Image (cartoon, rainbow, N blue to C red; front, top):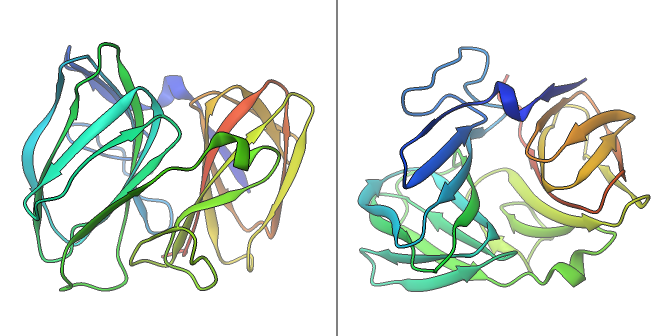
Length: 236
């Protein structure tokens, strides 16, 4: 089963400095049919105006992955970590027992991010943060694991959950196949740019595809496409 969640159907709010779209229930947006997908709890599509951002605020017991689509985001937290993550790169924050952080767009142009929250397998551990560059050229025509809590993904940023976050870039007409370990796992896929077909179903930029009961998906780009996929445990 592949359920397409069009960009126009997403919840969200425009705060001026922040134009946010929510694939799942978040803040003032609540849809009982879109609370989570497997252990993915949040997928926000955020556009942040120059010189603005999220002031210091707390989190606990959540794995928070930020995929920068355009511009850059500057992070600072209560552990003393500081970092600037550019377009195409990824940062991960394991909130653990508690952490305060800020995320600002200090650039001269708008920054666009996907922010993905995944429920952790383990609670009560020390918080942590990390970031890593993932050159888009290395993802050309194939999936690269960006963050993972699964065995065999040592080159990815670590997260404390039964999930894998992957990225790929495809030229128009190019195809790639992803195989889930078994049909009990679920996937959520969003093209950051471009358009593609997933097992023959059309998907446009910033639409979501909720995948369940599939052991394999074939993606064929109908335009040059940059995409993010989360392979996660099914909580149902």
